Length: 455
Ligand code: UD1
Ligand code: CA
Image 1 (cartoon, rainbow, N blue to C red):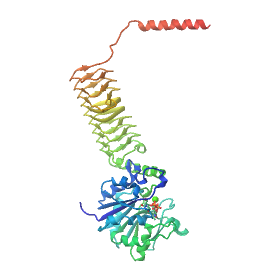
Image 2: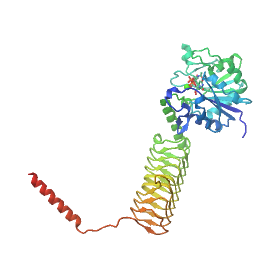
Image 3: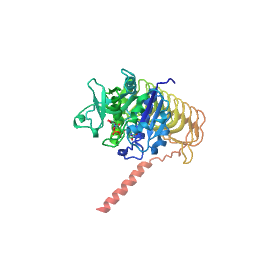
Image 4: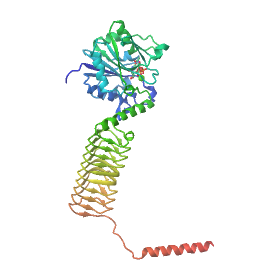
C-alpha cells in the first residue's frame, strides 16, 4: 500500500447521555452501519495510513472489533484537545497530516476529507485547516473568527463567546486537518480556563496564530455532511440525510426509483444497471441486485443476491442466503431464506422456501411450504429442474423431488420423488350424488318448524 501520510483521530469518548441508550452513541446505526464505521470506511477509502479511535474505557471492546483501527483510551474525558492527546502514543513516529474527526458526525464525505488534506498541504503551509459551515441556525456551535485577509484567527466556543462573536454565522464543524509536526506542540499549550473547564481543541487555532503559523477555513456548502448526532431526533435526521444521498446515487448510477422517498437502502446495497424499484422497498445489509431486475412495491430484502432480469414482489421477503437466479420470479407473500433458485424458476404466491435448492424453471405452486425445521434441526429440500409443485404442498425436509416430477396439489411429501414421477398424498375424494340438495331440504324443514313454534 502506498503511504498517504495521513493519520486520523476519531473522537468518540464523550458520554453521549442524550441518546438515553445502553448502546454507545457512536455505535448507533445509520443505514444499518454504526456511525463510527461510516467514518472508518471513508478514511479507509482516502487511504489513511492510520486510524486511531479515542474511546472511553467502557466502550473499548465494542470498538476494537472494527478492522484496521487502533484504540486509544481517554479517561476521564476532559475535552476535545485532551482527547486528541490520548492518541499521542499510538501516533509515535508518524510523519504527515493528522485529521481529527468526531465520531458523532458520521456523514462527512470523502471529497471533503481529501479537500481538507489538500488545503493543509497547499498554499502557505497552514498549521491547521478547520472545516466550517454556515447553518441556517448557528445555535451553540463554535464560531470561526476570520481576519481581514480571510485567514482563521480564532475559534470561540459558544459559551465563551461575546455577543458580537455570537452573531458570526460561520461555524466550526469540528473537523480539522493539522500538520502532524506541529500538532502536539499546539496541544501542549491548551489550558482549560474557560466556561466549561475543558481542554478545547478549538484553542489550537489562536495558539498557532500566536506563533505566526497560518490557519485556514474550508467551508462546506452541505450542512448535512457536518450534522452532529446528539439525540435520537438527530439520529433520525442523519438517517434521512444519508438515505437521501443513497437514493440520489442509486438514480445517478442508472436505477429507477418510482417513489424515491419510500425506498430505504442499507449502506452497502449494490444495484446493477436498469434496476427498477417500486415504492416502499426496504433493503437490509448485504444485498446485491443484478442488471434489469424489477423489485415491485413493498418488498423487504436482506442478505440476498438477485440475478439479472428477476422479478421480485410485490410484497416479497428475501431473507439472508436467498440466492435468486436469472429470470426467476418471486411473487407476493413469498419468503425465501437460505435457498438457491436456478434460472427461470417461479414461486409466485404465498410460499416459504427455506434451506432449499430449486432447479431451473421449476414451478412452485401457491401455498407451498418447505418444512425445514422440526424444532431441533434444519433440513434441506431439493427440487429438481422443471419440477411442478402443486398448490398447498408441504415438503417435509429432508426431502428431494427430482427433475421433471409433478406433485399433486395439497400433498404432504415426506419421501423422495423420482424423476418425472407423480407424487400425490391426499385423502381420496368421496362422491355422494344429490347429497347437497337433500341437505338443504332438511335444513329448510328444520327452520320452518322452529319458526312455527315461535308464533
Ligand atoms: C464541538 C466543538 C465546537 C463545534 C462542534 C461541532 C470543541 C471544544 N468544540 O463542540 O466548536 O462547533 O463540536 O459539532 O471542540 N469528545 C471526546 N472526549 C472529550 C470530549 C469530547 O472524545 O473529552 C468527543 C465526543 O465524543 C464527540 C466530539 O468529541 O464525538 C465532540 O465533543 P462534544 O462535546 O460533542 O463537542 P461540542 O460541544 O459539540
Ligand atoms: Ca457534539
